[in-house]
Image 1 (tube, rainbow, N blue to C red):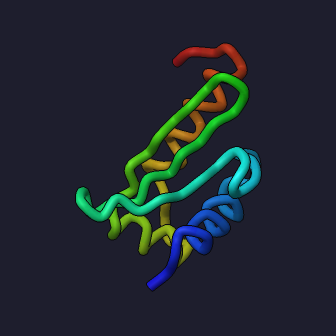
Image 2: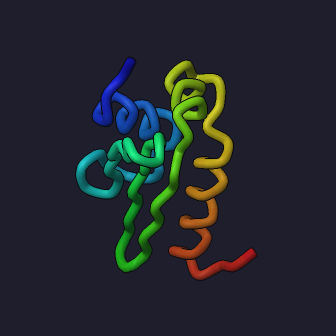
Image 3: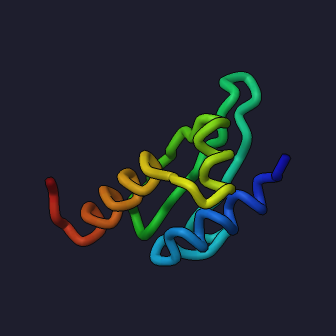
Length: 84
């Protein structure tokens, strides 16, 4: 099993453009919903992504973090003022 700090570091390894753990990205565990919550912020843009436990496991194994990657891409487009 891994903790929030380890997951945060893995996410920033996979997506280095999103920023720094504890500053631009924060990861918490929502035990009641059985998910991890990835909190992203840049300037005035905020995104909270709910990462299912199985998806977090795959992410930690370096296999995939597809849904999170799509949300990160959308956040980046919003920051740049582009909508798709």
